[in-house]
Image 1 (cartoon, rainbow, N blue to C red):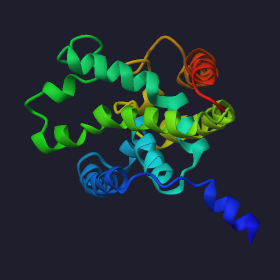
Image 2 (tube, rainbow, N blue to C red):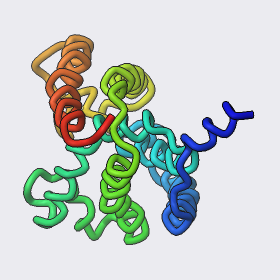
Image 3 (spheres, rainbow, N blue to C red):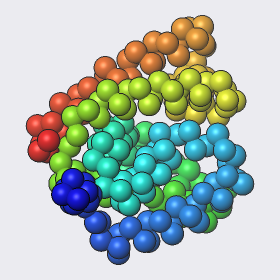
Image 4 (cartoon, rainbow, N blue to C red):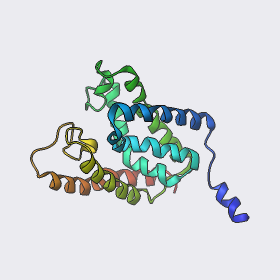
Length: 202
């Protein structure tokens, strides 16, 4: 009985004024994205983070949101910086200003604005799980392989065919993918892991 009480005590109850609107938002976004962009679109790391944060809000999983902090926070900050400049800095958020993109689709992409704030709130409230780097690396390898095999090269999901919107033509495709899988955790995840370890309690 005491063990059950300790287990329940370790699961924080995030405020319903955050959890319920977030859940409703994801419930609306999911069928719209599925119909407009197809199931492969959910392999984007940001979309995976959207669902992972939802689960973390309900379960209090420190590992889950810590993985998303390692995996997507820098990219989300880059998206935000590009959004502020009207999509002219990096082009990541340029579609938000494209009149050819339906207004409802651009509105749903607004999750890039508030999801990083929620992840940081979780880090402040619960701390950082130091297992996140290894777990996120393993997840990323699975997602990258799935993105390579199950989506079209012209979609370039998670940049598995080239860094940027267009597929690269310098290296053989599988060699590029292998190099990308090695460099992503070393260049992108590891520095963020060290920063989060220093800023937030374990």
